[in-house]
Image (cartoon, rainbow, N blue to C red):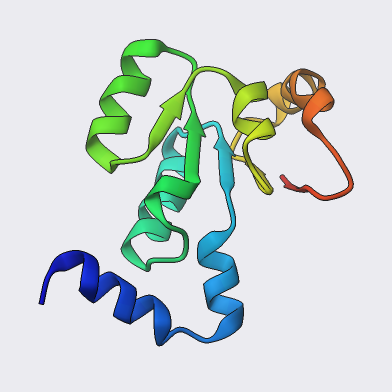
Amino acid sequence: MAKQEKKSQQSANLEPHHQQTLDTKVALLGAGKMGGTLIQAFLKNHLFRPENIIATVNHTERAEQLSKQWGITVTTDNLAAARKSDLILLGLKPQTVPEVVQQIRPALTAKKTLLS
């Protein structure tokens, strides 16, 4: 069975709420140790599709490395990541949360969920 066909069959067998979760676009702002662990768990357990996950880090070189390693989009632009997502997770050190929330404020709407 072709890989694409197998994925389609697996998706068709999912309960409706799990299908909705798979379709959710998620941003993880701060893909350090804690954020990286969450992303790996999301991918391993097929909680979100890789193409629906975007993570952020502070340095371009690190973003490129993690993008290749995980097969997801990794960027340094918190605002762009927040704009493209339905669910925004903050994997940040407490002292950086206020600054990042200010950065992403233009992307926050009633339709988005923000978790810290």
